Image 1 (cartoon, rainbow, N blue to C red):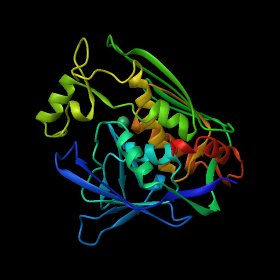
Image 2: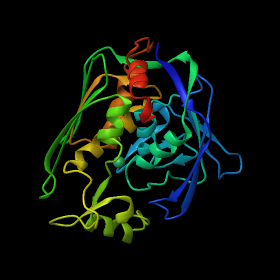
Image 3: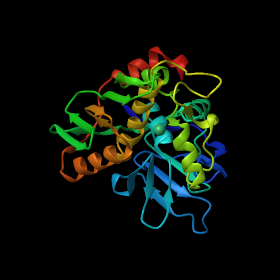
Image 4: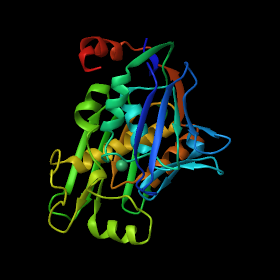
Length: 299
Ligand SMILES: [Zn+2]
């Protein structure tokens, strides 16, 4: 039996919001089994809560947004990626502002803080979605395909006419150890000109080297360099892990994404959900706990 998990004790994080340039605090609290992932706008007078569900998620340009039509929380994707990667099923996320801080542009900081707090196993089987039928969606050059599978596998492909990127592909087979070692550290990236233009327009007030890889025409401007040569496509997998978790339950499927972004990911997930192609089931396989026992030192 694979059991649901939450964190063992509360976690507090604080960082700069890339859209607002404000320092924003977020707090993570354990929840009981079957409560799911719940966001709270803790800075607003009546502290409204929004449960993580595909109906409340919007795929925007460069960010995934949680919104119930009245209040919103921007940039939820990297935190969701960390929760998906580590297998956190139940969590209250109090956000003191309108966006999740970007930190270094990867999921590393969330992963570190959650692992420091530790995990609590809850007395209920993990609930997941299995895919009943293949499904594909296109949007210009972008395409995302979902195929039935016994495990979550992601194949991502990106293409940018930049000497450091070109065409990059990544095949990822999900378990928490692969997530830590292959995906969690990969930072988001942006082009210097675009960043400057968005800053001028007041959209990305806090965007700089500390929270993204910044590219110019030939190379990157970050003095520390890349964390690995294909960090760019690994970040695409990190984003997909976050966006897939917008369903509210982990999806077991093969996901092939080519030149895709948040908008296409979320639109495709909404369609899958509405078309009734997802079937909820309880995970009774032993695989995860076996791995957990073998590699307990990592957690
Ligand atoms: Zn991202």
